[in-house]
Image 1 (spheres, chains in turn cyan, purple):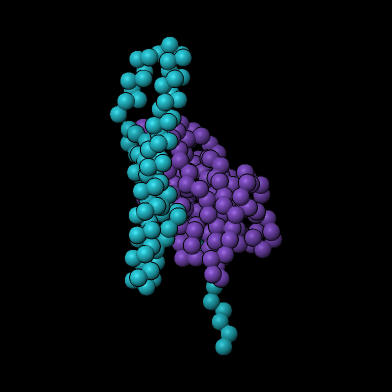
Image 2: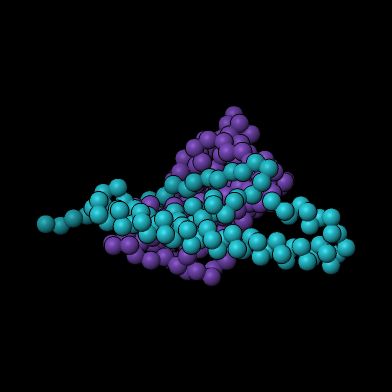
Length: 95
Length: 150
């Protein structure tokens, strides 16, 4: 039997909007996970459970490194502010 | 008057693919995304019949806080196969420190005379105020990828 199923489609994008701030490491980690792991609803329950566990594990690693990146960048900014003679701006980086 | 927009793959884009006019291989710096204004601020109709970035005209978001015409370059990921489906992906795109309202976007190819590749509706107006505005592309898989050829 011959099958001619096929087609060209455009996917659905998500829009993220923040008011008065940028994205947090937690939010960016979640976005990255959506790109890395996609779990189909029709997958076998065992496969779904394994995928969910893997997603949680990867999520934790991503979040930890994203937080390190933010902290490291703040260190860089701190030095730039100090070098530019604006030590008062360093306080703005404290969360 | 208002913008009418529907997520669609332009018919012209399908023809152009068969002519080999688009190359999404990673590293290409030719694909951009431009944003539309708020629904009530425009008047055009966009969807499968959209052929080129130039059609946006005044319906494109004006250069203002966080947005600069003619949109931002996208980072494409080299197309691959997922099963029997060819899929395309882009890295999420962020407009930082922005204040604007938009109802959709147009992906177009600056390497092919600004021809349209995808019309994206955001399902209504999306507003950002002194923050980040981000387009999050779907997972690169046969059932979800931003552009799929089955």
